[in-house]
Image 1 (cartoon, rainbow, N blue to C red):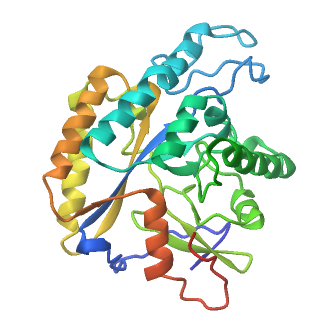
Image 2 (cartoon, one colour; image 1 turned 60 degrees about the vertical axis):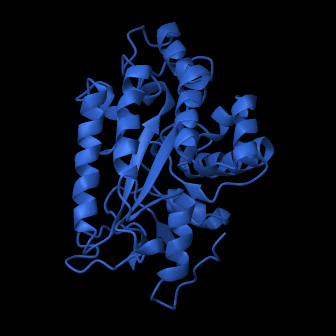
Length: 312
């Protein structure tokens, strides 16, 4: 078990554990739809500058301190159109996914909050807002975590069990999550293809790694240009992991953004990927919380001197 704040360049090494996924699956696959629209940096949110990341521009061209109406409307495409197109696609194929949701974005979108309650979508908290936690003071970050939990409880009727903040955590994030209690895992790491335990001040805390590699952010500003680019990239990753999974099963995270993959030409590539994946039998397409619960149950921390929270 690695210690919080210490780098581990070895990980599981040459002998990773067999995760023993349900049904002896070779690969656990989790699609993650990021819900950020309305919580990004903006003049309207009092930040003093306009956000344009993961849009058709990927950077704002207006003078700092002024509203970027074009970038704002590109974010709005995600919440007005894209999110429904993505959710309909997964519902059509009967596949689960996780919403990596900023609490304020859900709070400001009553119809989406209602859909989350109705469909009981898995929620991983993406922070109260889509802001850089490593720029926050310890007290500001503690307050953001508390506001996120409270906001989601009010808007969807339940607290989040997972956490994954923007870009990367601060050096205090994981300790604050353990301090707040109730989180089964965080995904603020990108260093593995299996979950692993971290000792956070005597508490065993689970990390379920995320990825910026298998992610539609490669549309902004590149290298993806077409749905075929997206499909080929992700299909190759899936095929390789599926082949390896005959001996060493792993997990595959696939990151999505409504304002990006939700456009017609792009979602066509995603659909072709889903069809390809579904042709294979030894897979487990699951929610992120399913992976966390599986690891808590089947791979508890070996060091009995640290405490592990009960699976939620």
